[in-house]
Image (cartoon, rainbow, N blue to C red; front, side, top):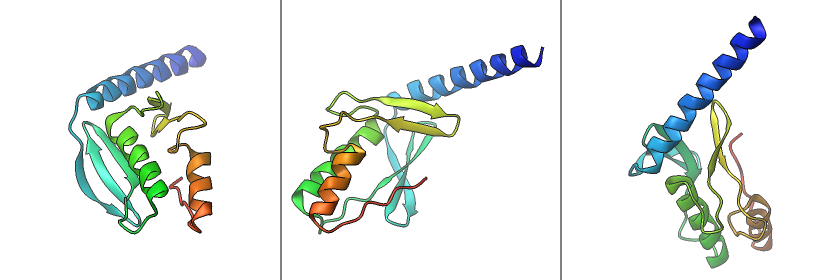
Length: 121
């Protein structure tokens, strides 16, 4: 009986989160604060922590960060990646391998310019 109850609870939680993602899809992002080198944005019922786009970044870094920010705020990247639920507290976007906003590409661009990318975990 506990297994059925747990599966039912997980299904309800997932359904609730899917509803929140749908609400976020039509919402206008609103900046609500800062957290270290990141910004905190409200997108419908979701709270997003995204990297700040600094003026002194080299052009390739600005492009990668800008693309990552847009994907986070609007739920979809130009590479086709979309928001997905990782767990009840985390939404992620899995960018294409060749997308400048992907973790590996962003790390490579940062390394080329002597920068370090820090991620909240």
